[in-house]
Image (cartoon, rainbow, N blue to C red; front, side, top):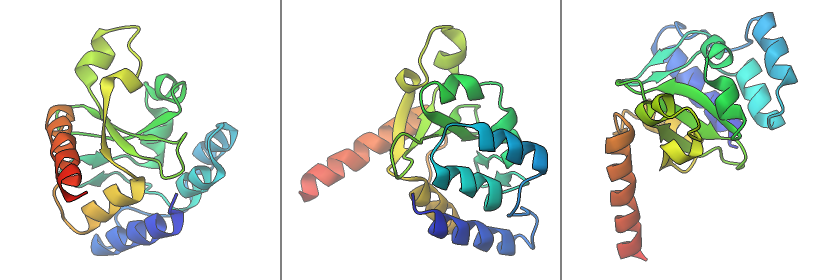
Length: 167
C-alpha cells in the first residue's frame, strides 16, 4: 500500500478544509480495537495515525476511523478480508480488499448484501479502482468517481475495454 502517499493526500484534503477532517491519531478506544484486528500493519497504522477523524464528504462519503470501526457490517466484510471505508450516495458500500498489497477499492451493492442473508461481500462487489491510493488521488484531484455499484460496474467495464484497445 502506498501509505505515505495516502497520508500526504489526507493531509492535503484536511488543509483544503482548514483542518476539519482532523487527520491524525485516532481516539484511544478505536486505536485499541484496530490494534487487535488481523489486518496488514501498513493499513493498521494508516487508520490509527493518518486517517480522518471526521468523515470526508466528496460526493460519496469516506468514513472516519470511528465509522469504520463501528460499522455494523464490519465483521461480515472482515471475514472476506475486506473493510468498508465509506458509502455511496445510495447506500452502496465503498470497500477495500486488504488481502492485496495495494488495497483495491470495490463498491458493494447494499441491496444484494442486505437482502440475501448468506451473500458474500465479495460476490456483491465490483472492482472500481486498483488501489486505495488511486481513489484518494482522484478525490484530491476532483476527478470522476462513480456514484454507486451500477455506475461503478459500467465504469469498470469501460476502463477494461479501453485498456484492451491500448494493449
